[in-house]
Length: 466
Image (cartoon, rainbow, N blue to C red; front, side, top):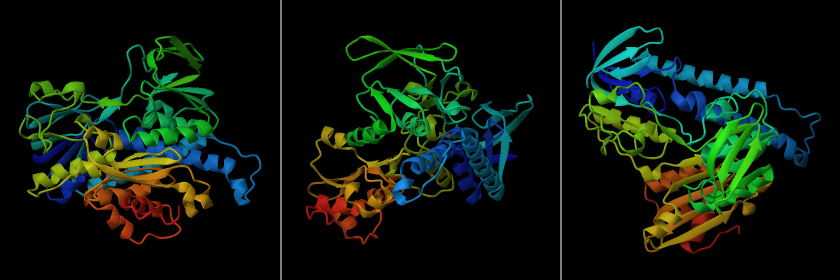
């Protein structure tokens, strides 16, 4: 049997690509190294991390906010093992859903390591050593990424851990040292800070969330500090050692002085790197870029004509929804359609509380490119729904072109902005103006009407409620 498409990797890029290929009538197979589908996102990334974030948020709200609503709880407790069990149940049910979708769309699934014998032949080696050779017209590499580390720091999975181990801890850390002030560190640090851990962030850059609009990281630092975070910026980590029941992290500060931090766990959270081990790509000459990324053209084709790559193994932000849309793109391309993908309309979301979300250009990018822009901003302190929920931290900031009024970027931090950014992404995709969004009737009282207010400010009319 010769497949139309073989996809290596079953994460949100791979399995979505497989589904769309199946829907389009392409004979499709998917290869997965592990015994569970869904990749990092479903099993040890997006889904489980958001599950424990949600659980810890419920606990924090019960502890800090319920009394103001007239709800009084005696002997409030957190059971970490039950929280982890809930997370595992969410993961299992979501994984079962992916398996069902493979059957529904007639995708053949092979478990094992996929490696190239040639550009059209793939060998699958199962855990028991059994080998199955498959033949195909096209291949899509969607093998994702794995946690990065630093020179002098070895992730031992005991005291010095990655996000994977942080999701299955059997105790609440007394003092969690987080290396890295990016999304992973802030999310998982929030989980444990809410349930009693002291959290220390050691960051090389001058602020957290350094790749996003700078106003967002500065604003998020305020509520995280109230939660118990301490931050050490402009610090270069030089080592981390497991000393039994504690971890010592060493670093060099901005002044060049050697400093150290001591805790019982250290979370390495400096990001992720492409994972292509075992593919045997060198056998067929697939080109690799700096950082281990697979080189692709604008249609995700590698230098080997019938082989494509998507998701974390190629350039661009390592986002599950980016990988999924790239998977749809290549599938539709294979079927002769003309898909379109606009990277500027892909949102970036941080699931701390308050949530952080962004789409389009940052203010720093506009300044660097000499773009003449205006800002419209609206604070959640002026939002009635936010006051009801006692969630008034944050704002929505809209960047618009000074001459055309076209929206160039929308950046927000506040309650449920992970959902509000959907409207912002649509506005970016359709190249809407601030006036256009401001003219849309938004429900009241809602969180998302703050986007309308920010757009009113950007047009020069001024906000109604501030």
